[in-house]
Structure formats: C-alpha cells, structure tokens
Image (cartoon, rainbow, N blue to C red; front, side, top):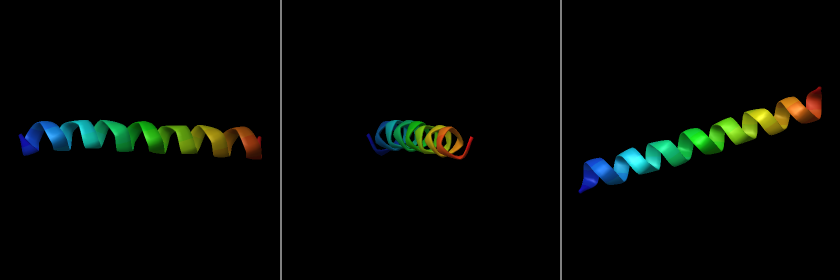
Length: 29
C-alpha cells in the first residue's frame, strides 16, 4: 500500500528532522 508506506516514511522523516533540530539546539545552546 503506497499510502501506508508514505505515511510511515513521513513519520520517519518528521522524527529525523525533529532529532536534528533538537541536536542543533543542544549544540548551539
């Protein structure tokens, strides 16, 4: 199911972006 695959891919991408943003904030602060 492409829809479910895209859904999980979107979740993973969002979690990855959040992790990167948190890491950058931790380093810069």
